[in-house]
Length: 80
Image (cartoon, rainbow, N blue to C red; front, side):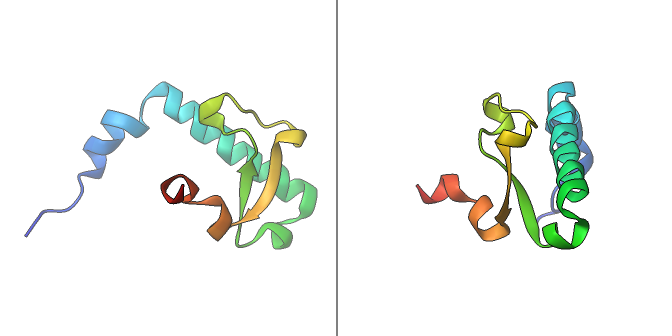
């Protein structure tokens, strides 16, 4: 039986790096901007979709953001 994930070590090794913190802050800001534009009820249960992903140099400009269902927005790389 395994002990499970060591979240503290995972954060220190990956999620706590300055570049990852910056990317996460951009994603959080994008969701807040979409909530302000469309209202929280309109984005409930949906993901904020970056047309050009943040990890590929995309940003939070209005032309790069959209709403997508969770099903459509997550896991697409593994399916291709």
